[in-house]
Amino acid sequence: MVLIFLVPANFLCARASHAPCACAHICILWTRVFYSVLIMVVALLNVICFFQKLKISFAAKEIDLVEWEGDMLAVGVAEKDMAKDENLKYKNSIMHKLDSRLPGLLSESSSEEDFTGKTGQYMVLRLPGLGSKRICLIGLGSATPAIASYRNLGETLGEVAKNTKSNKIAITLSSTDWISKESKLATASAIATGVVLGTYEDNRFTSESKKSTFKSVEILGLGTGYEIDTKLKIAEVVCSGIIFGKELVNAPANVLTPGILAEEATRIAAEYSDVFTAKILDVEQCKQLKMGSYLGVSAASANPPHFIHLCYKPPGGAVKTKLAIVGKGLTFDSGGYNIKTGPACSIELMKFDMGGSAAVLGAAKSLGQIKPVGVEVHFIVAACENMISGTGMRPGDIVTASNGKKIEVNNTDAEGRLTLADALVYACNQGVAKIVDLATLTGACVVALGPSIAGVFTPSDDLAKEVLAASEIAGEKLWRLPMERSYWKYMKSGVADMVNTGGREGGAITAALFLEEFVDEKVQWMHIDMAGPVWNYKNKSATGFGVATLVEWVLSHSLFVLISNRNVMIT
Image (cartoon, rainbow, N blue to C red; front, top):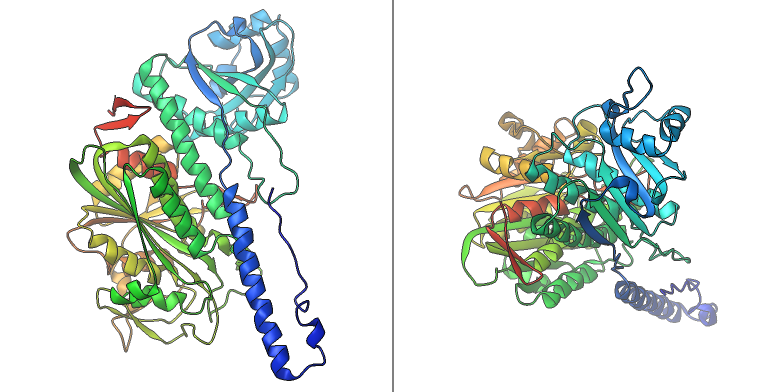
């Protein structure tokens, strides 16, 4: 249990209310010290129970649906599979078989409930006649389902299982004939991922902790054997990284400071010390590397910056590819002197401005368990806060990045790109061939693509194909946007090499053009603006976006993974 103590601000100064001014100042100072220590204690207590583990077992089986026994049998149903013949019988063989066993009650109930198989629809029935206590129909829509649809199917199933307090569940699809063997593996993985995420609840900061009774899921009709079992095992491992990322983003800024984020990174390296090493740079070390852009952002905060570098080196030591993944790590963003104001600024949610770093560390946690062979990966986060104080960066200041380029700061609320500038230079200096950075960077990208899709910017068509293919497998939505070079004119300064923001029009593009200035020409680079999908406003919770795509991208550069002490060929 985590206890959070609230102490009146004047508590330590109560006895000095009539004392001389100097005494009052001392009391105020001690109050601040007290709160600082208290916050750190609370943070550490929260970290102890930071990562709850959902233990749900998955198995792929081939079994007669009507004979399966358990709490709930779920069927993913496309709209076309709800079609009936002239005798009002389902044309789809699976739906027909279930309805026949239930003497027409499934058909009758679906008509009464107006269930047509549309995306987002689901129906739960408790009917006699099957081995399962309940049957659940979940709509897949009219179009050919993408992997994201099966992940959504799993999430819906997880939520239904939680609400019905089901323990043992089976899931099948009404149609699988058109799905290839490779797609069946990805489909099973997406369903399993969705189930775990749909079941998971972050209860760390609530007084009552709900415990799920969910124990097992059997996936029927998608094949059996070592390949699918391994795919399901990898899905479980990736989910642990996604949940890790969700909990990092959900944690408030008084709990997750730059220092605590660095501790979590160090903990990953310690847990998987056979493949990971950690390097955490302090302010003085960053000064030696001339990271003036990053340090300019952090200057106002009482919480010092921590530059995080995790290095994954594969078992066996042989490396054919070196990659870097860079994440924006603003554990809180006030906007600085260009402070966030107005109802649309969402300053109370600016804890999620480290969503890029959460994706990076979540991927690291997963890959530490999967252990891909042949690929070296550098995970880099320039963690800090963007606050306001007399030592803070002012509008109009000029900062110098570690590659020597000078930046006129015309908006202190365009701070993420300033931290990424030095992080990208550092990443290039690690001798990597490819870099992907992730950041909750611009509201402009949210306006362009909405809350569910991340924008992708890269001059490399090959890298775009790689990452977009990984996102398809992962079930996360990316959309490539143009690197319009003519827009660089908006980034010109009269006194420095560039300004840090070019205005509202094309803001996501100019932000990407800015970042490109800090990437070596020999390195393939991609920027992912994930400001939209980092947060689920309906659930008021983080999504863990980016972890699954990053893991798939890294695995695409490896021939083997080592998981559960067994070699697995990745095809």
